Image (cartoon, rainbow, N blue to C red; front, side, top):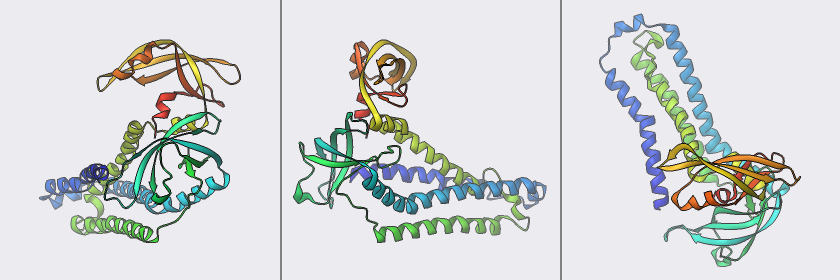
Length: 328
């Protein structure tokens, strides 16, 4: 339960500063405003701001539609495509930790799976799985599962269980549709309300850079990219790292040198590792990687060799094996 409360709190906190806060600030500042000032405002600038706000809200609403509704159908289609065209792999459960609460309807486990990727290189991957058939005791340490790998790992999911099925929850979908329609109606209604309450017969001249119709949409779009950035940093997941992990080849790289970059994150230094390695075509490459090195990882700076992954089609695209193994 705590797992969902913490992110839920921060989402509500961010939502407050995206919508109610700009509205309260705007109407507090403009509670007493001179109607005569509207005559002196540039109508073309106001109309430009209205058009910009409409474009921004269309981006937000379309994104919500994709995330809440269209994603459901795309996810089912992707699952069916993976099962039809994917690559079957047998995975060994290295560890299984129950992460769901005692009152949860189904048990959820964080699994560490050992299996071969698309390039026949063994990898360790962490994933969360909900067990809807606990009597079969499928998710225990040492047991094996059949996976189907996505041949295009940049597209999620990167793999599915061989016996999984794609089903759409009708009630959940209906609620999502009504939720999206409610948001679209609120935005449309606010345009009508703002015009009726603030135009005073002067058209859209009241529109300004600080109006909630513009600010709220901008903040919501900013939040999208901010959350994407934060999640990529917390999980270590990005398109390049996923691609290297599921299509890459593992090899040992000779550590040539280690230097500080001068950058510190949480008082931990970022180091530049210069590496030399040979690819599967016997070509020697020299490349460098940057990494935040914690106190418990300082010994890696003294190693003679470090395990890395590289892409066969682009051997200069590399990543540390340990970083990929810890990625979810």
